[in-house]
Image (tube, rainbow, N blue to C red; front, side):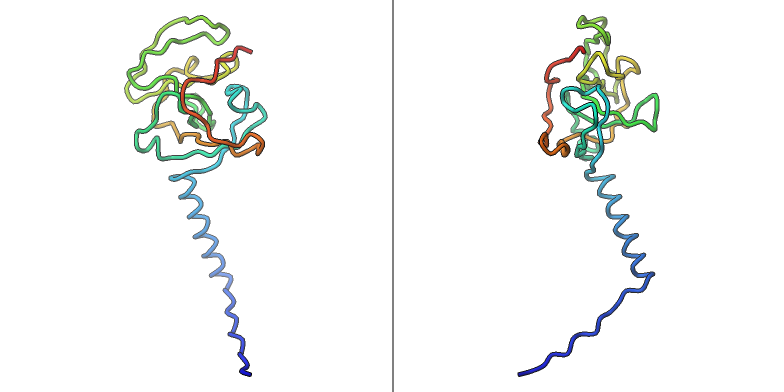
Length: 172
């Protein structure tokens, strides 16, 4: 019977461990910034698509980088009024589209607006309780961070997010 001698164990120095952690952090940052990442959607503006208490969603970053956004996509964007605030809204108008704008508290259309070149028109699915393009106007496409493709949490509601017209406008 042959006896094997155990291979010598090579411990990583503190500097090597730190280097591995930095590389891992850079990889995660690049993945989150350029491929896909998770974020939380809070507030009542996207009821019934998302819960008011906050849903965790998966956001992909290819659609906005390669001009693949379209009417009905749910997106994450920087707020034009408060750049530190991230909003979750549905694209209701693309550049050149004529959008019928409803007042926040009415089912009636109040005016029509043509979306400017290089901009999108964003609205929440819950029209009575959404601060959106009806308040701040069309949004530069450059402020769109990505397209929401999936609800991850709560697990009981996990699934893909469909593009298209809002499920139905809510007025409560």
